[in-house]
Image (cartoon, rainbow, N blue to C red; front, side, top):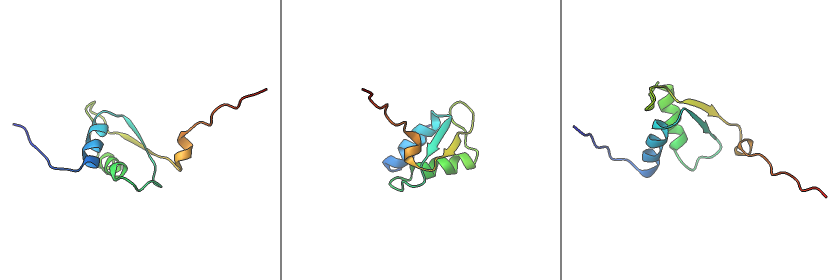
Length: 75
């Protein structure tokens, strides 16, 4: 039997991404979406993804930490 759940788009996206990932990088300085909070809570509760493991959550210090600066042109 199927079970249906009513939720907003952020919650739905968090459910799908949690199910298919093993590591999640979250940025605490970006409060625009509750998705990172959902993932953090589920991992802390020991919720399993489709692979049978708990998602490892890595909290980044800044969004700039995830980007590599472009190479500089020389000459």
